[in-house]
Structure formats: structure tokens, C-alpha cells
Image (cartoon, rainbow, N blue to C red):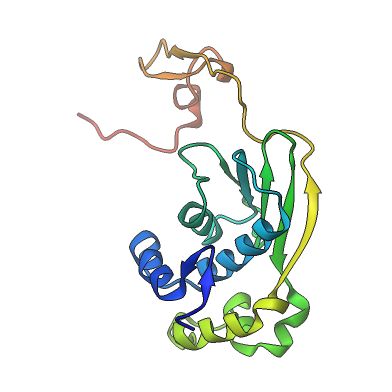
Length: 194
């Protein structure tokens, strides 16, 4: 297992980076790395790489850890669909590769199935080492992929004009209306009294 390379990183080094970035050893990041490997192998190399994940858990961290696509630079988009799938694509052509977990093989890999279906209480989960070994054993069968073309760019590449909210004084994108979302009543917080 230690000699395995995922996204150009030795498995043992990936584990260290995973713990530092994600906070713990994550089967989701391991599977995400395998998905990224497949997508990158199927794509032509591009300096204009973008990514989309279809879940908010683990896969976004795999993309940020193993590619130049991050939330902060806008080259990673996250869809909260709850699907363990991701797409890498060229933002100039909108062509890419979508990868996902092959549910058809889970019957053959009980630890992966147990982890993926999340029916087991946290304290009864298999140890990471055993699960990682099974993930790497299943590697060739575990990931499905197909070429895709996006319908449209998922990130606005145009300059975003900002204006100052007349109520709170903070800047926000002008396209959101005459006052910021928080002052419009869409705030996710309430200030404590001063």
C-alpha cells in the first residue's frame, strides 16, 4: 500500500497531507484521489482545469488537496446533491470527464459498502487501514467515468462589480440588488446587542 501513487503522491505522503488538510484519515479523500486519477488520465492536459463536486463532504477537500482547483480561486464548484461524483473539465472548452463511485461493485467489497452506505454507527466503522486496503484493491472496479461537456460555465468569468450597502455599509456584488442579502432579511446570523 505504501508504494501506491495517487495523483502523483505516494500513499504514505498522501495520508500525512490528508490528516494535515482534512483533520483525519479520510476514505472519501482516498476515493476522491482515485477519481481524480481516472479523470486526469482520460483528459488532455490543460492549464485551464476546473472541477465540480456533487457533494459537500470529502470530495471538495480531495480536489483542493490534489489539484490547483480550490474554492478560493473559484476553479472548484460544489453542488450539494449528495452524490459521490466529480467532474474535471477545461474551462475554455467546457469538455471534461465525470467520475463516480460504481455502486454495482459494492457487494464485492463489504468494508467500502459499509463506509459508503453509512448504516453503521461511527464507533463500529472499520479501521482506516483495512478500509484503505480494500479501496486500493477495488481501485480498477470502483470508479466509473464518462466524457462530458458542460452546458455552461459554472463560474462567472466577468468582473464582478461591487457596491456599498446603504444600510450596513459593507460591500457586496451589485447584481444582488439595492441592499445586501443580510440587510434584505436573508442573514444567517443575528448580532448580539452591543
